[in-house]
Length: 408
Image (cartoon, rainbow, N blue to C red; front, side, top):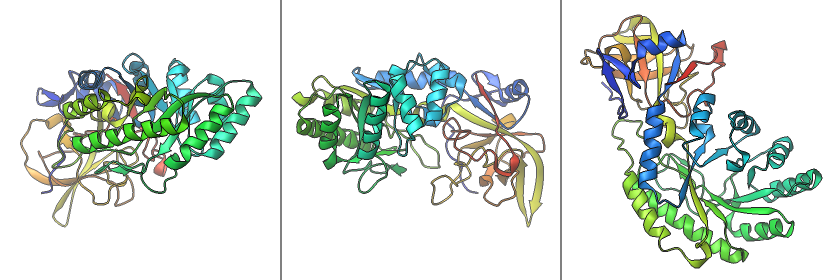
């Protein structure tokens, strides 16, 4: 049998059935009226935010990266939990504004921003994290036409990356940000144009579980921000330190030592150079805030045996859980945490593969793993489904459509 990833803390059982926020999985499916279903626990999100507040230095603000999960009720819940919202498209701008979020709390990063997106952000007084000199020129031209002083920050492509990260966002040639050595000249252009310069956005990587690696990257980020600020000759108002905090998905993964990250960052901020004495810092997190708070529930519609191997065929699949299928950035497929939801505390009885309903061999949610014997009608739970699930998977593949979603 192949091992399954670790089920996150915070989930329990009621009458032998998986419980989310004190409610049975079957009850949540009944409330939604169908499967597949994403369920997000408000309690687990609130606990994660509280843990971060307790571990991180008080002067570090907490931002939510909307791309992780833009579900409207979740965005509304986040308004009172975090300090800022980081978006990556005009569509996300519409989502956060529909949730009643003050544009002053929003920053907008991402390469390839269209003129219409830039114009909407400038008009709303959203901070733009500029990704290139060309984007800066377009933003300044649009702002002049609108008669608005734009709020502009520069996204820096650092000379380093986050070691051990699942996705490297810095170091070497990248489509993201402005190469560090070109940043001072661009900032002087922005200042010369009379824009409201908001500082730096420096993001070196994501999905790291190594506290020492994150601490080292944060130290390098702060040092880079200080150097660039000196070269610009202007006090640095804000510095987005990026994120990169990972969650355990796979067998053998160990949770991030958040206390160690917070302690190291606190020591670094206590020894800031004069250039950064008044700088406001923030951490930008998406997956770490909501990833473990989500569960994907899908119903078994067929049980079959082929050449001695058992397959549990569900009504869900990679069109909602692309990452769990192994087709979203992983080189070698490994099993996510998966369980039979209505037999949550039952012992392992058989080896089976959980597959989806799509006509492709890529549609696999668990590969040759150990489960209690499951039958047609049982519910399968895929954990770590709160981030990059519903919004990052090809829901319209084969005309399947999106899953239902609930915040409980």
